[in-house]
Length: 127
Length: 127
DNA sequence: CTTGACCTTCCAGTTACAGGAGACCCTATG
DNA sequence: CATAGGGTCTCCTGTAACTGGAAGGTCAAG
Image 1 (cartoon, each protein chain N blue to C red):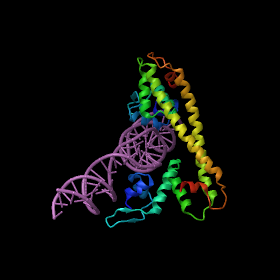
Image 2 (image 1 turned 135 degrees about the vertical axis):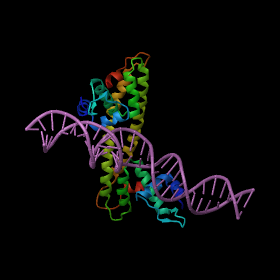
Image 3 (image 1 turned 45 degrees about the horizontal axis):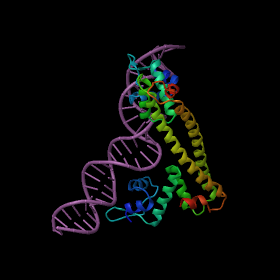
Image 4 (image 1 turned 180 degrees about the horizontal axis):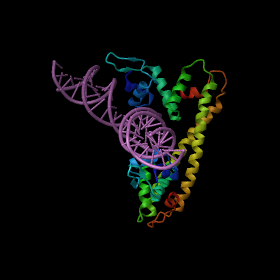
């Protein structure tokens, strides 16, 4: 399985798969005679795992850690839960930040008439 | 007023102020004989404007545009409102994304016992 | 045999700065 | 007056997670 097939199967771009190989996250298990990266089902499954973890906003380093736990038969669910909980907390913090930003900006936008005149509460507030 | 005083007055780091000068966002209005950047009240006010705009998540390019509108006596409030509304929409999209992420991850975290055993719904879901 | 789609490596660019090197400047103190 | 400490300058590198592109090798089809 060449890199483009693996990328398609995993739902990633070729560039991204090559990048993951470069940083040692998911290396191609083999190379062809011509030096082409060759992937198998196992590595594709890892790539999918990474894609889904990334979609959850886990960083590459967190993905690396999660992938280690994914492959580790002996790890406890507590180890996984710790990382996921940390990520959940980050999400909640970001949500609160976004909420206050949203409310403040929404207030400014609704209070701005948005007509041809120059006076604007948004600019007044920012300045 | 040297760069560190200006930075302190604007609530920014010296590095950031120098960066804004480099990219032509807020240049120092003058230089001393020794080549030191010299700031005045007007430029400090612009720096504050940028800091507050950045805090609202406006990109540097958006800040550049807003700053242009800020300084433009003839601009209409509609022009400002357009940019702010666009930003507000981006925030709302991000909020919805974060919300579904949050719900899904929260569901996984609560369904994981987080004990010494290896079976873990989080990993099962990601893999 | 050639064409076109693949693949390779390496380099540059993205965002919005931060860190640091090496050199210059300024002020205060001994 | 020398020097010590800060502050400032420019320039280079690094960050996260890739994307785009150049130059060149490979492979299958017609």
